[in-house]
Figure 1 (cartoon, rainbow over the protein chains, first blue to last red):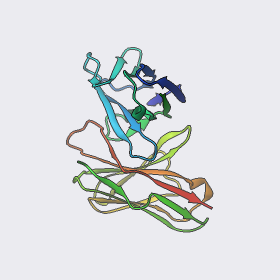
Figure 2 (tube, one colour):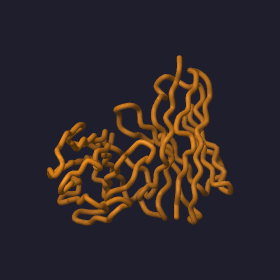
Figure 3 (cartoon, each protein chain N blue to C red):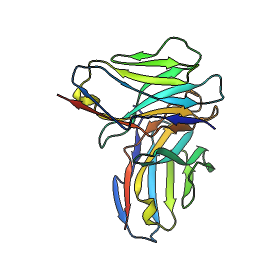
Length: 114
Length: 114
């Protein structure tokens, strides 16, 4: 069965510092995407970053980058130069068996302190 | 920009009432989804629709039904609401053609069943 595990229910970081959110997953697929989504308080969930499993290069979107280790089935999100607006729930997600349906982790609540 | 609109942000219903949650997307997406979000459990898929009048059960369909009479609209129905259906409900949509699994979410409907 495919699973997504986020072992950090809460994390905190000081403004301008760097924080890493962890995600591990399990899948029998050889080619797939992985996603990090952000859900700000009382606002809609949006895609932060996407990684294609066949690409060895880690994805980067401005201050957001991933550390993708396919063999270890690990997909962590690094947020550099943290800003107050980064405070949110972050969810790691994996498509179910080549379908368009996503399996989500339980989420990590990130607090950013001034 | 893709817009996914959920008709009600907050609802309070009584046990046994029939509840309709409406979702409309404006980007001609083939896929539409209803997820339920609970603290510590992440997002769980209730139902998925890949075309008009087509639907598939997700992980937790019990107590729910759906309707998709038009491509842009996907409704979640609670035939007889129960207190354990108090939750945040998220609608999402996506293209089939892109096949990347990226979902576009509405702002959510927080349902309280008394």
